[in-house]
Length: 306
Ligand SMILES: Nc1nc2c(ncn2[C@@H]2O[C@H](COP(=O)(O)OP(=O)(O)OP(=O)(O)O)[C@@H](O)[C@H]2O)c(=O)[nH]1
Ligand SMILES: [Mg+2]
Image 1 (cartoon, protein in one colour):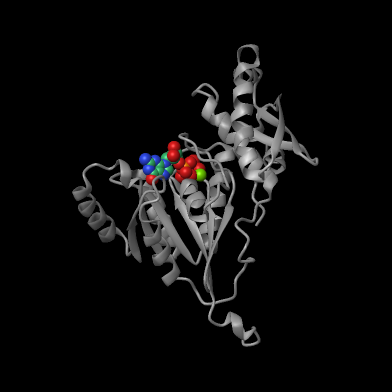
Image 2 (tube, helix red, strand yellow):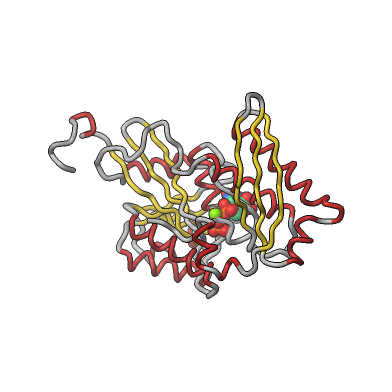
């Protein structure tokens, strides 16, 4: 910290905290919980998160800037996956502290590779053991923790449940202790670096993934094309992008029924987000092989900007 900084910032602490882990371990659920608002989509499916998303938690003199990241999957080689992995590793490089999320009682080769990457990064890391609510044999958690501590010198271990919210305060306390001194990076009122439009796209995408079976892979994207706030209602036009005609048919469903349900569920979430009535119009468009196209990835905001 430079000596010219205002004295009132001298006591404050602020740090970048990366949420890193395999797909589907609950990183975004944890982010939304810690911030107290739904910032980004969470689903049962792996590869839900596509971008680095900041969530900001300010308590007293401390500001925690959480970086949610796409789940790291080193087995897939498709362009979109390479981009997602890169986004996660850049977040790791920028972090003051890493929260390495794993699922209680599970540690597979994917986790091992991520642990090795964290070790190589030289960043201090907390092992965050999520989903303890569904881990019945709680006494088995101890050997699990011991094995991890033997493998890597974690700064701390925090078992919690992002879904039920149990022991979130334990994580906050561990993180706060390790924040570097420095001025806040964001206004204390601010919760995210993402505009409402992004959050709206995430809610539509979440609704879509929840209403689709396994037949449409995660290669769907949502883009809000028009947004107008009128006195009583917000009108939102959004496009759902798929890669193939067959996928378009699946998203629309028989007689348009599925698309209608996707829209209804998303509208309810959007009305909660905006606190007003929403008219949502959804269209499905085919953009062939967008997950392999660097330009399309950039246009969708998936190729990161640092
Ligand atoms: N039982 C239980 N389920 C959880 C918990 N936290 C998250 N989940 C579920 O795990 C699934 C994945 O959650 P996400 O938050 O989308 O996981 P993620 O790590 O962000 O996944 P990617 O974005 O794909 O990397 C969802 O179905 C969540 O509801 C938890 O504490 N307990
Ligand atoms: Mg996620």
